[in-house]
Image (cartoon, rainbow, N blue to C red; front, side, top):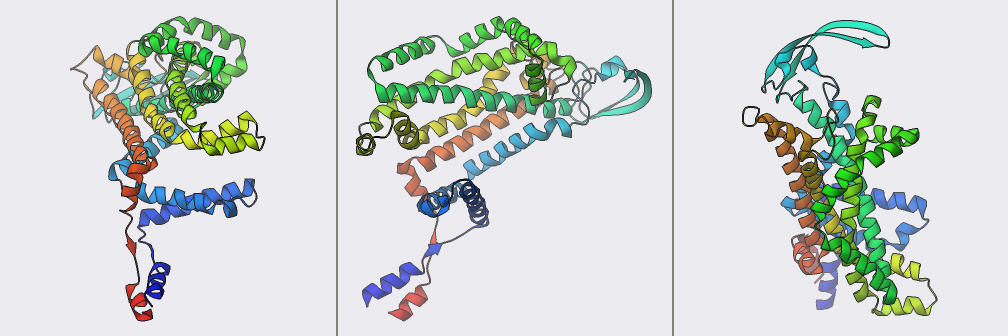
Length: 403
């Protein structure tokens, strides 16, 4: 009778679902359905993995700092995609050419403009009023519009630097840790050479040296010009300013991979001694399959946490280089460059430092909060304690009646 009571209790046991849990369930089920369309019967074979994802989402939903970070990150990504289209004024419209009072206009100011311009070989005259909700910059541009357009610059640099740098480092780390011997020695000595040189100093040196070479490459490759302009949502007239922007991009990729090589190599050295790797070798699987299909999924946890936090670090570093005059140059919208402009007129034009600074700090904080939450969820030692917060409810009345 006692066993029957226990079985009835367990059968009626289910997770207490919040609204966020139900939303995350729908999202995970949708992802699983999409993967199932690509890989037949994937959902049926990976029910345990799907349930594990849901448990991780439940734990994330009960971490307020991680949820706050997730909201900030989602907002940043959305603004990075559609920000240039939400801006009230284009980033390359300079009101100071038509009214000098628009230069460094204070927040809340309204400036009347009598505009004369040539468009499509026609002279256009019109009058308009610009409302500066959070002030203007040196060129009289609406600061809010420039910040929205700058979100695209930050997001594109962020995504591609993290996509290329860490990926390269992880591959080298896997190869080094798995094969060992001479390969390991060569890869790690090269890695040590990069790590021995301060990353920021190396990035500054590369950002100062590379712009001319990159600009020459773009001038001889029109397709590359068009692609870069589309990615950053820039106008064709800014093509000659792309060299400095992409120099920072290349410099940060070169600086960013060594840390991932070390982490991936150390984790691979531990994993390659496990029985599942020996079994994979015994049945004749190739080294590439063992590394990328079996070892990588088991070491990806701490790497994902590091990647999440590095999204914020990339923004900070890029803004720092732009502040030093090594990144994007006006009129290309860039958060760090706005602070560089404002530093010359602080505290009179405090808004040029304050608002871009608030945006940068908020985005970096969002990535760090999300990274901390992921670290807690992916670490088995703290993960289980978080899962206990996912309270369970049981129909004890049913169990007692069966007893």
